[in-house]
Length: 147
Image: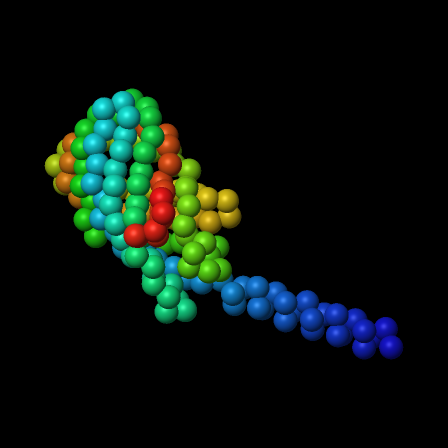
């Protein structure tokens, strides 16, 4: 009896673990972002999130923060990859950021931002002139929704 109970408990635990990982989506972000900084950094843009379950979500992006920064930048066709997403709406919200940058002309930028258990690895190519260190937030909201 104990052996049967143990096998049933083990099978239930294995099934739960399989369903938990199966519920995690692979989601990507494609975006454009344009901004400026003079002590206060501010960038705005838009993008679209696509997940492995076929769901899509148009989004608005805002990055802001303070620090010792000067410059302007324009990222076109940026890309991001989310981790630990179970529903496409999990991506909505504010992510913590910290960065150091120095760029002139063509530039490549990579950054990881986090929101609780969700991480977003960002990369993009663009043009601009920027120098400094900034701390702040990277905010994703539904396009056309309340911000």
